Length: 185
Image (cartoon, rainbow, N blue to C red; front, side, top):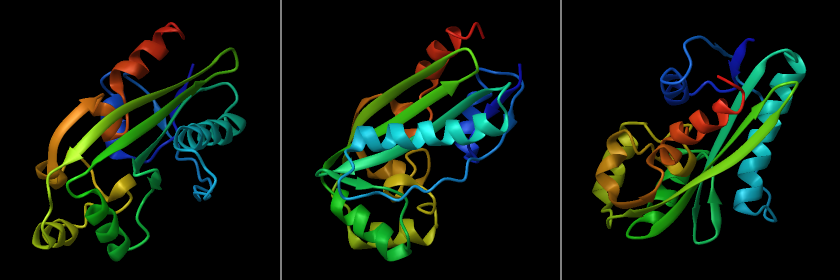
């Protein structure tokens, strides 16, 4: 059976390679607009399900792995920043605060559908404007929920983590491994 990762994320590709030798990458093009009424866990799961649905319709005989990650700070869902200034606003909002990160994973085949949410809490140190500007200059914030990737230069922002580190990276390897066992992989 062909396995498809419904993501263009290099991190997700790298982490799935720890679990599966061969798979295809086919990103799902969906509307990820966050609505004011969206609840964080419902939203992130809906996005992962929608990615899996789109790719499964195109490749019904395949096993599709889809994932989505969000950052939630003070009940606000922080998606991917729309601009450098939007990224600055997000980082300023999280400075010295604890926020939640949720990654939803959906694995779908013709025979079975599984879904799971992995979570972590991340506390940032107080960030100076200079630290934020230097980070933004690296342009790592682009295409990242909450405007940061913990595995990059933003690692210096992190005071503590409680939960699944790989949920913060965007692909909870242990959770995915357990889910794939249900598919006899």
